Length: 409
Image (cartoon, rainbow, N blue to C red; front, side, top):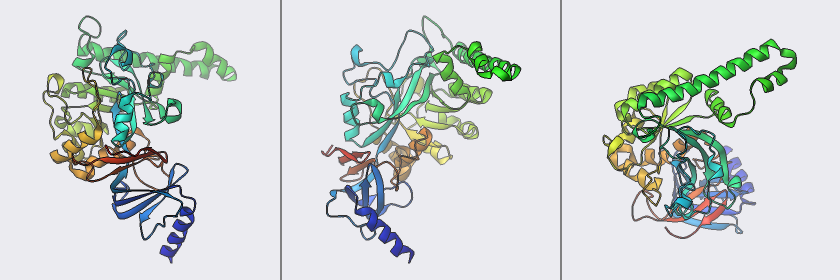
């Protein structure tokens, strides 16, 4: 009886469906994979999903077919759209070097949705990115979450302010300025958070002293300051710090700051995280692991290709990233980075999770993307074979129910 009701419901939904995606294998990332499956799309959302016996495709539907279907891929840490393809001064807006701490810099104000790199990663199945200001300064600015389609970024953005990028270690030090040492870097961060805490406490005391005119007191004691506003959101656990740190002692400094101020952090890169599995797990911190094919020099000289696997097996939530290197004119692709991690112990299922549902959970967008479920955004990638196999191609990409790529890449 229940099965009959489900079939009738699927039939009713199918009557208004606009696009149907057929897959020999559909990795939903919300349970078991579906063999010989169908996804129906209506008004930008997934309207139905199931086997070809359960879901009826209406005749008027546009039908796309593929051997393998996955959710649209998510790049959990990128500078695409700010760091452009030309790698020249006019299209490199990912790092402002005029001051060590600039948390007020917004990614949306520098994002170029028409940069060829955005199109390039979209054609390979990447539909969502956490992109923004790069590592390289102590607090370089904000990241945002955006879909990789459209011309107007305001229509494609999912979260205008996702995280604040912080750099601990060699990359964040200034050879001829401040901070010049690790101790100074952490002291500067601590000093800013203490300053904001003092402001919050003073405002609360003023409000308590004058309940009758609370709003006017709040305004008079703290004029608007866009830097202080975003830092207060960090202290209120509304915006996490995305802490780029590779050495184990820099990672420990990040965990120490998070505990001292009760702030949320996500580790970025974390080449030596495999040395601190217990500490990271105890802190409840997620890790956006360095690109698998990063170059092993400097801070990353102790990088392990098994880092992602070790962290995941320990129960630490991970995601993959394309990352940032100032001298590389093209962006990495998380599909390829996840494939390498899969070969080095992460395995197919966990590698795919790291660029779909687990990445969505770390970014707090899993209610909309990251898996193929009824009601979620219709962000879908189609492949002519195993997505992690070098010879496979992405044959089509759908974002918000619209076909944005239909050529084989």
